[in-house]
Structures are given as structure tokens and as C-alpha cells.
Image 1 (tube, one colour):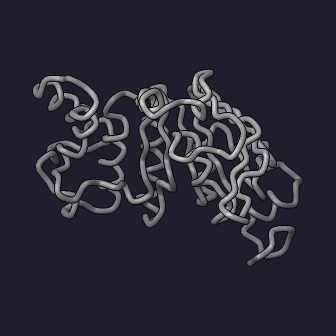
Image 2 (tube, one colour):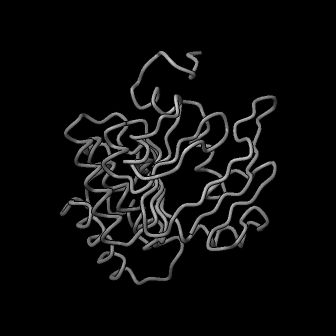
Image 3 (cartoon, helix red, strand yellow):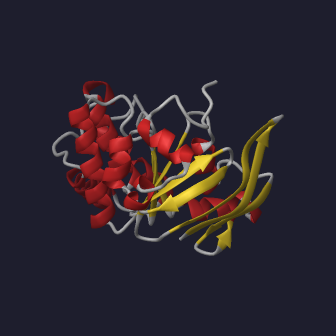
Length: 248
């Protein structure tokens, strides 16, 4: 579904991606872990075409999106949904209008069908009867759920999650993790999750990729990552200050 080949990206003198290779399996949840400021969000933006690499390929269903113009790239993006770190809801719109937004922007669905789809997607994330509420009336966990309902509104093949549990208490974190698992399974999604939360990593991920110094240094099942003897992975998973990862 997604294949990244020899990706390089620098911002002025700072090299962020340094020959990165990664193949993300279709119909699975892949979690990308790594240090804060280490390039995870930059990598996510390459996958959806918001940033173009200095060199390398980003293949979506075999198409290298780095070579596409804006019109063709926008067509590819219809395969994607994205749940942003803070849900990124439009404050001036109701919940229903937020979820309906991509349907109104990118389809010719009738209003009756849009309302039915909005209700269905909200129900899929455990919310009913909230269409007329404003984002300001919602808790952080509810905003994340509405953001996910909007992300899956157009039945995408791929959903990207950028730190989905940031700022949530442990109970709500577990609720969001379960929601990611259920949504991925029910909609047969290819999911890519950026996360620092070690417990969440092992809860939601079918595969885990470790990004370090611009490269993927490990990729495997949660069990394989837990069993790794790579000192970088051991230090990161333990949350230790002792090891090869330098504290800047």
C-alpha cells in the first residue's frame, strides 16, 4: 500500500530523513516511534504529499506521488483520512458540519445521504446525537472521536494518526486505542500511527517501525521489538537516560 524508498529531506543544514526505507503493509496498523523532533511528523507529511522529499520515492499503490502535479496529487489524497494531534476541528462549525465537510467538498452526495453518512460515522466512533453540538462543548476525547469520524467520512483506504492520545488521561487513552483497533478492523484500513506512548504502541500496532537519525533502524511485530537487543531500541522502550540516545 505504502512504500518509501531512499527518502532524503533536509531543512537548511538540518538533515531529517537520511535515506529512509519503509514498506507499510496494507490492512495493518503500523506504528512509527522515535524521539521528539526526530522526523516522525515530517515522515507522515511525506506520505500524504504535504512535503516533497529532496530525493527518493513515495509510492502509494505503486504510484510515486513525488512526481505528481497538484491535481493528480489531490486525487491520490482522497485515499487518505487523517486524525491530527488536536483533532483540528473547525470551531465555527457544528460537529455534524465538521464530519460532513469532506463530503461536501469532494463529492456530489445529496444532503440526505450526507446526513445519513455523518450519523453512521459518528456512531462508528461511539457518538450519537451530537451533530448540533459545537467543538467547544466537547471534551478532548470527544473531539478526537469527531476528528476520527471526519477522517473516515469518505471511506478512505489509509488513515494517518498523528499522536492520537496526546493530552489524554490514561482512561481516555485506552478508549482511543480501542477505537483505533476497532476502526481499523471494521473499515479494513491501512493505518499509520505516530506515537510516543509505549503502552499504546504495543496495544494498537501490528507492526512497529523505529525512526532514528533519519533512518528506520528496526521494523517488526511488537514482540520482535520487545525482544530486540539493539541498544537504541532498548533505551527508548525503557525510557532510560543511559544509552546511545543523547539527551540534547
